[in-house]
Image (cartoon, rainbow, N blue to C red; front, side, top):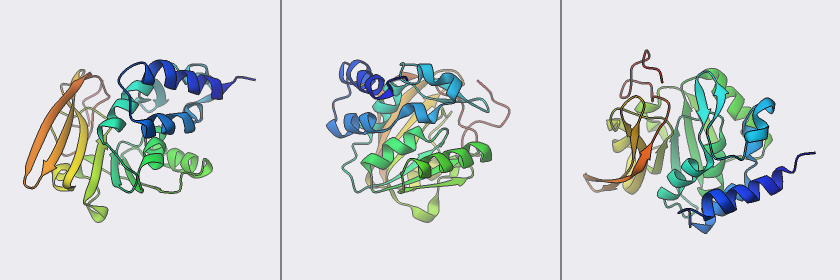
Length: 218
């Protein structure tokens, strides 16, 4: 039987600790969440390797390092309310569930949303709430958010997400072209939004009213 526990620990050591992931709470979360549970059985051989994997419907589960980098950038302490745009497999939501008080996640594809919700409940992540919708519009009902993380590449920073960010809150989002983006962290300071670049990345397109149109594909 495959030793996923050892593979997970090795992933944390060689892909995260060996690079620039230094937040001990983030490292602990990655040690706890069974990544192989978030990919199909035929892809589990590569569940802990440092590259993205297909989850169907043209979507992917991001490489572990990128998930960790984006998560660390939120600087979570444990009590925050966090919004995720792009539920996908639910892996990022599970990581956030270990680090924040409440997690709200939006997925535009109903099939993925249903699968992820079932998976997260089965694995015991009870502080995650998922809905189907246009993530570029955010989830106003539960705003403001202390952190917002967008797991798809946008051609702009969606205005509704900025407005749903708490004062002092952080938004992490890939922004750029259809194939390559710059990972940005936007921190709200009153009515001002301060942007930082965290490096280059590549994500599937963020589809929605304040993102790419439906016909844009990677």
